[in-house]
Image (cartoon, rainbow, N blue to C red):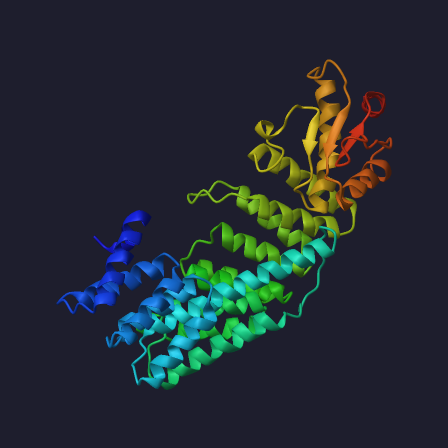
Length: 416
């Protein structure tokens, strides 16, 4: 059994044993195996501090770490989100004239890709909040300096591998393309995809992850046509797009203002398929965000259909998530989704009244949080529904809008 598969308490005990060996400089015959297995456990457990500590203690005890020991230490730093430390270890290996193999390089490239994705998500989350929960089409978005730095470091590693004659495999390229996706470098992503195709005779072919990352790169740059081509090429290569692939393409369509194509992708995902691919909350948010931005009644009707589909699928407004049928929580939704929810909720009330499913009308509560969402929802109810719906904010519940029974009844009567 590998130590990496052991329970955490056993791994901790194992580390104590290794520390004892190091402290007493016990050169037992299987120590090389022990130090390697210990570092592997560190790598898989994201215990980068422990991995570096072992390297340091080995040197202090006169035990020279080898390529494998350094390799798993690089992986530990990468898994722990310490890409700078991973690159430092690579530099140390070069100074010691150690041969860096594909696996070790891949660990470093993967570390950069993970860091780039994390930084990109944080930046997008910040932008989303700054825009009040609204999506905006801003093709060719400038990336922050951190993501650009990570991309440059990735490119340096690819160049080093090529100059040193180290094989760059599918994992190498896929991870590099992932960094392209985070940085919005769509042309570089396309180039790497084509490089993989050219090396197909060596067994290096674009996989689903590589294609999806390249689509993301195109999407972040507002390049719809290249994104769509990659999506179709993936199918031609015999790779069935998964949920992440669809969401990547829909994200590209959202950025590039392609409401018709995005709506078509939603419908495509609803069709029966052997892989049971179905939309999720990310899909819903981006599709409605795209349609909400577009003009015309047709796109509003499409948004209403998408929201209704999502309710039927249990993606949103799940019955088991509501305290009662007269209370809905909008606080976790984007502004466009909350807007569609308002239309859906009161339309459903009218339909239920027509079918005699509602016997008694009550106050209706909309949980929004004490934020901009509260005023946004209030505007939607007042300005977009007919007859207009006015609501109040209880003094004891500043994050809730309450539509009084009389107002609810007036709205229903206006549609009967």
